[in-house]
Length: 112
Image (cartoon, rainbow, N blue to C red; front, side, top):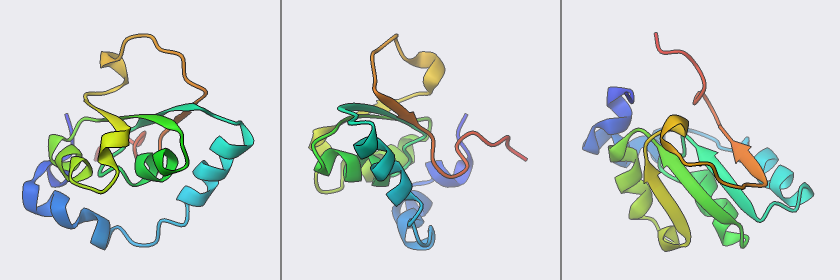
């Protein structure tokens, strides 16, 4: 179950603006480049910021998130058609070959 603020349409729509500096994503894009990753699984992709950065560099990206509200925002962004978006989590995915799996920010943290 996703946190309510990632699901609410009005909050999801402004999430990127209040999320602050995403300089941390430079590390992920550099890692993908260093590994020559051609297919990346972005778990907890949220509004798709990293997924879109990677896909703009020619990487095949599968973005997965539990929050449908966040995925709706991701779908509306430029370049969203280059990413495969999945509503769910790691337990709902079939086995698949990827070169890199990412989980940014607080994706793996425990609620509360």
